[in-house]
Length: 279
Image (tube, rainbow, N blue to C red; front, top):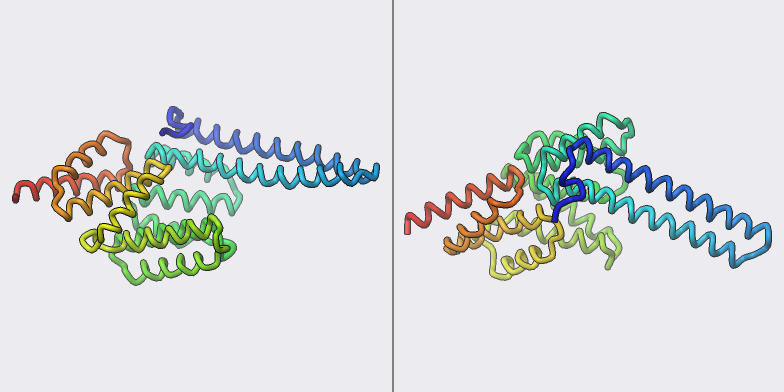
């Protein structure tokens, strides 16, 4: 599935995103004003039921606004996560960064650019960006995403000390979230995924491989699914399933793929070819 911006340029995608955000804000403000006026009218007329209706409507409007805002941001991020178009996403982010002075917005954009650096294979640049970021609150989802990326980067650089420190901080965050909440489940699953990622595939059990297959089925973003496929291919290759791996890697080459994953795909394909020759 492609993003809503798949056929747009970076400039068009950014303009569409900002237009969507503006429309959401205008609609939200208009609804709050109408419902607020209704609540005031109810107070003047001594109509408690109408007042409660207006108050409940304002609360519902806030919840709906934040839900739709999250959806709009996710659609913009899909330039990367669905289309695997790092170059376009980076161009849109950099243009957005130059158009805003808001510190919080810039912080968020820097984090997104760090993900672009990672998927472009620019690990040092990504770590430099992450070092500049600050987050409010110990439960911040942006902090969680930053720590997730740190684990990936330090693991790629074989810096096990810093990798494990970042992973421990994610474990601590998982405990802070309300038990049974979506955030708690996300953080807990993230810990399991990263623990598995930090172990060589040669040490995986069949249960570990089954977990990866399950996650592939659950993944709703193309980029996540491709990353899981590559990890599973590495596991299958370590267990001698050369023909199966070669077919999957060849098929994967026909799909949109980020530079980092393309490098991994080619390396695995060459390894499979060498093992086939050796046999």
